[in-house]
Length: 211
Image 1 (cartoon, rainbow, N blue to C red):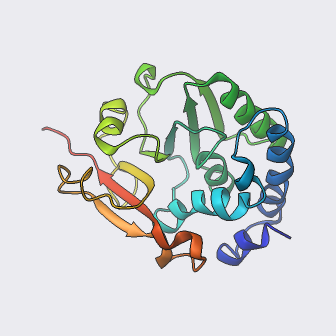
Image 2 (spheres, rainbow, N blue to C red):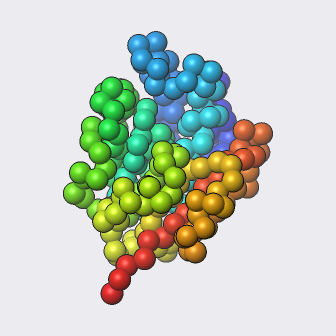
């Protein structure tokens, strides 16, 4: 079973969580025949390349009950949907400017009966709410992304780690992160042994606030 790679790294899932992860592939396979949500070459490796990749964030930060997370440029629902399955008591808002992608996300949410996820077809700049963390998968260079989400992060932190951005990126990040002295970079290969993760990283950027 392809979902076994998830269970390998997250062995303490409930029966309900395991079932939801197992159902993900069929939901995306069905949609991918209608519109290209996930690239054709990736759909057969959706657990390795998309679902487990999304859950790399969970190896870095556990989201407490009642916390709020914004997924910007969610595309087909990554990293937000896998994280929402893993943290059912946290609240997730998934936004994307492309309507057909949010339609897919909403269908997956409904199919899995996820009650802790809201999908919005909009630009993040038009969102009013504030969140504990903003997550995303490489939708823009960091300076652009920081500009997009300005004012979206809560000042007071629920977690030991300060509120901020948790960003899944790959490759050489030195240039785009040079202006962010507080940025921290972690290799996903520290958490996952598969070759796919040798160049994959998490960037954590705590946001500072003026007094």
